[in-house]
Length: 169
Image 1 (spheres, rainbow, N blue to C red):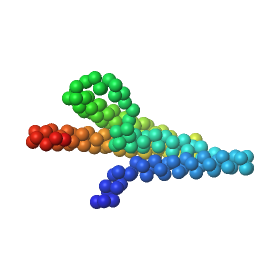
Image 2 (spheres, rainbow, N blue to C red; image 1 turned 30 degrees about the horizontal axis):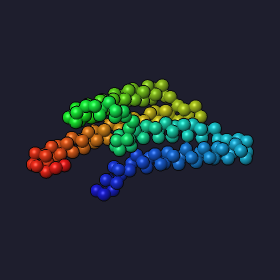
Image 3 (spheres, helix red, strand yellow; image 1 turned 90 degrees about the horizontal axis):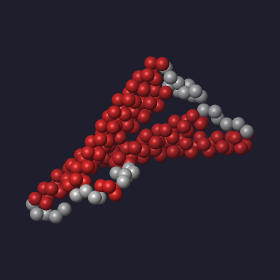
Image 4 (cartoon, helix red, strand yellow; image 1 turned 90 degrees about the vertical axis):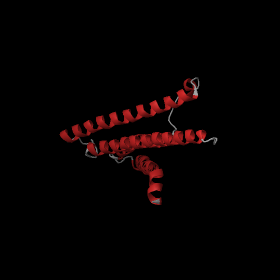
């Protein structure tokens, strides 16, 4: 159980660290090969590009989980506390809908890539594998958003229950 809890907290960070190591290794190797030998590994740039794309998508569940996404708080501060809470729920539901929509669209892209047997130019790597990884990152984002919404509901429920009992939150 402790391992599952640890993995739940750190899964995205592990993937991001691995992708960063891949980008660093291949970029450094290519720079050294170009400098010393005047030649480089052709497919390394493609690996770096794919790793960078995946790191962008796997960073989404990180910021969803930590609540560190960009937002403008100036507008929300003019509303009463109850309205802020309602806005928070509406934004969370909108994000869930957005991730579900993106999952559906990515699924259609994957089906199209499989249908035409789309491969990358240098590696001849099936692009559907990359698209499946993006789909998984979006699914993870959806799960993290649902977890954040559940935690918010759970926290609001206990805050309300405590205030009814006369206990300050």
